[in-house]
Image (cartoon, rainbow, N blue to C red; front, side, top):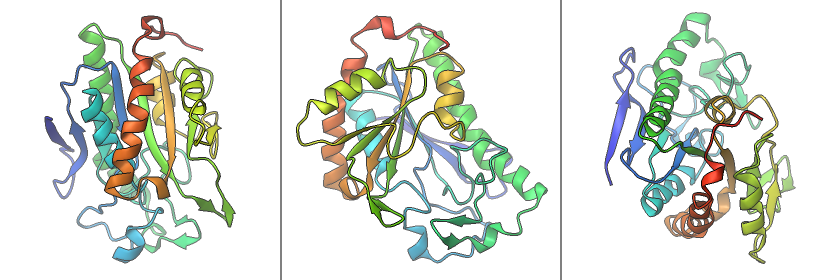
Length: 265
């Protein structure tokens, strides 16, 4: 499986802002993972120890491994962030106050409290823009090759938030375009051991999100966001199990060519 890394030319540390997996994959689905990594670039001190950077506040646990495995199973291209969402959240609008969060799940991020406009602009240029530019280029390439793509964003969520257990094994997040969401909800809910959320535990109708709105809805291509519960995919075995579980329902989306056309809903 071909794999490459993308580097922001303006990056102060020369580090890769994103990881590109299987860019020549022939599947019409393109996967993106906005919170794949928990690395922190050199010169960016968040003031958090390694143990905190392994927690869900820093990344979507298990999402990157599921994304890579789906790319392999479906022969699909995928793009994943490298740096932690605490450095910059690549699934936030640029005017969102949580783009560079000062707190996450009641954990203070000391290094972000003094971020000024210059540092904010630097992080956008070095880590946010290269990832989204590369995703846009990947979608443009697929379109130019005559296969209008569909976008699948892979995320993960904690099993408990604010003391409340989340019953959903997976959530299907979407807004007006149900071309992917509707059939996925039917296929997954047909599995009796699954609890599947429709815009749970978050909602795809929230404009605070970025990737599926900008790269999916604004382009008019079919798109959906998957939220898999982290305790199901936080091991290699769990990630493999869920990638295999999702592969066939996702593959079936490509069997109906009428889904793959530009529609602004």
